[in-house]
Image 1 (spheres, rainbow, N blue to C red):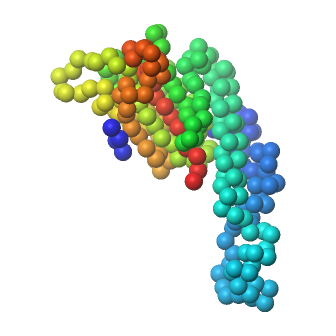
Image 2: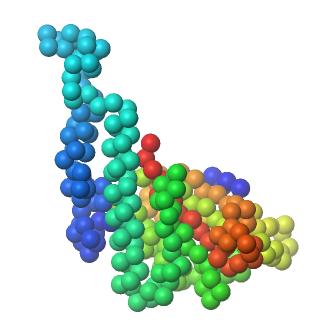
Image 3: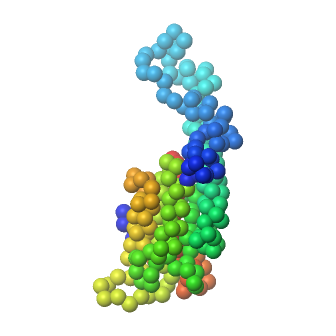
Length: 232
């Protein structure tokens, strides 16, 4: 069902944005390359620029599509590495969240950096069969918002449930529940600093993508995935 920081004075970047080119080990390359892909001023050919085609062939500053793609991929990788590092530091330094650090998993996939917040036997993000997020889970989501808000990458949210059905009187099921929990997560991220235009996709997939495929009823299958997406 589809219903639709690394900055900060106390962060590891000392108040700078995570996407500040100075923060990357390849900043010189990136800066030069980005300058090369900046559109030229409008106007006709000049004495030194007789035609677009001849200029492209002769000008070593012209960046190919493959080079631009590589620059963006490298920038995203550096930003994701820093984001993961700061998120882990925030959990370590927050006494209220220290014992939840094992419930936050990071993974790279084809879409970007996936942050998964996973239930366990003695910790649940939501009340049973509800979309009411617990205070500890809200505090955890707030920490995610703080680390993600300095980026300009789009964000996707996916809700997951286990295979256990829940009793209700209004025809709701795990499909609607997972989508509603994803939307509730979006609202909390927005309230704690993430701008509305950052969200690309909000969806619920019920129990179709279990964390533990060998046990559909495993509590860890109940989770929220927040993906910081690769830039195009």
